[in-house]
Image 1 (cartoon, rainbow, N blue to C red):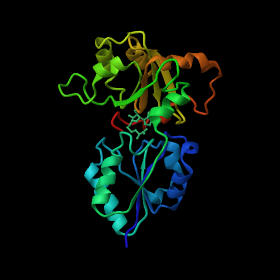
Image 2 (cartoon, rainbow, N blue to C red):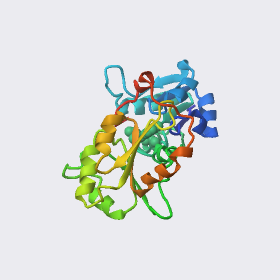
Image 3 (tube, rainbow, N blue to C red):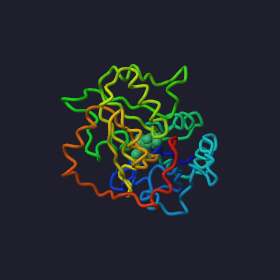
Image 4 (cartoon, helix red, strand yellow):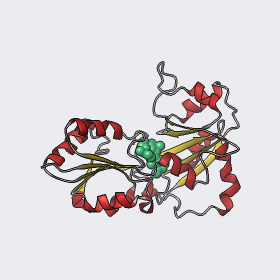
Length: 266
Ligand code: SAH
């Protein structure tokens, strides 16, 4: 007998943005393997005895991916129904693809349950549509985690600057100075609007806006920390047009809720 593994996206953090299917699988699971990215409110819904944290350990060390892979297989072979819960959508910068292949190669029945990715939801709740008929007919999702000056950068910032579409950067708080510089050097207008959305839909959501030129100072003044989304492009300017009437359920940060933000590679 073999249990199943469901690779489940939690959405950006608000429990009301879980899919109906994610909620059912969480309720029915024997074990939920998670990191911190699903956010405090969703993790609080899961009974302690079902939860296994495979994110950052005390002392700042990451649980090795090999451990998580091995643990999923082990639990399924013990006939457990496992939810591997990931922030946003499990296949967007979340190693979901790698885990899927690992499970299949080990003969474990596996299901992928899409979630609302923070790459779209983060901008959206801040009043920023990632595409717009007048401003952006394409959107690129990129990682900011790597060094844009390294020789074989996986992200071609020059090409991105030339597309004229929206650029959404995940894991991009720390390297913000590097890639905003790379985009300016590639000829992008320094006045291009940029927004940072920290902990989108979590209780302490924070949004800060500026331009390609000012956003690093804005980040520092506002104290923006991971996890956050960077939105670069004309669409980021849309927020100003709606801000007065934009309602969200998500309050301002308290010191306490800031504690577990994680790192850019979270
Ligand atoms: N699979 C996730 C992304 C994982 S990569 C998804 O689809 O959303 C981790 C990065 O996601 C973080 O560094 C941050 O850039 C972004 N992220 C995830 N949840 C977020 C949230 N609630 N608010 C802002 N950024 C978030």
